[in-house]
Length: 300
Image (cartoon, rainbow, N blue to C red; front, side, top):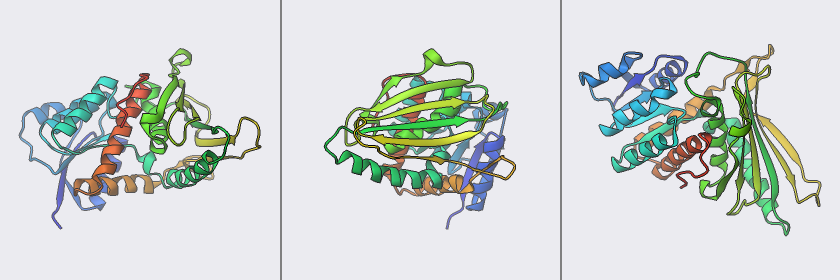
């Protein structure tokens, strides 16, 4: 098997994680760049890699992703894809026009806990939707953690909220989704709420409330589901935590999430699963657009 080569932009927490796990999959990094990356790249004295990994601060994602896409070099960029709706749209268009792989690293979408939750939730939703009464389901996405100096170059919506909006779009077709409340009116520093609703398609009627807080006294990453038919049936409820905790209460990261994500990316790089890859890109771009407070997204 041919050895794959890559360039890494960003040597922080996620950059180190990406490098470690890609190297375990036989990838060799020919360049590892950090604060001086933009200047070095412009000199064009680097060897063309099979792909690039962008794990620099979010405010630089657009610049670096565009740089590699313009040269038709596949790129994996950490979430968020960009920091504005216009940037997200432009990068999707550039990737499509240049027929170059653009993949957004949103490992929560590959979290085995979420994938299992998704499997069971969709079964329950199909059962609920088959009844005579209108579908009435409410989902709550909650993501909280204490203050951290990381990712402060973007607001809480593009730092945390974008995770859960991506999960929601992983469950439902973006063409069926509308924004009910972008949360900007009640945003408070590092806290924000948002509401979305599925208004067409098989699951029309599903509502979702999102709450993100990056200056909380608690740590929570949960999805809760509440079923009911306008109060006629008792329905049922359940909730899932997307993380495990140690005995001391600290978050125990789930390595399978990143491993699953990398395996999927390498399959896309090899030319497999193209349709799924395109959907993943559109979901990531739509998540940025919605988190940025726009009512209309790229859709599908």
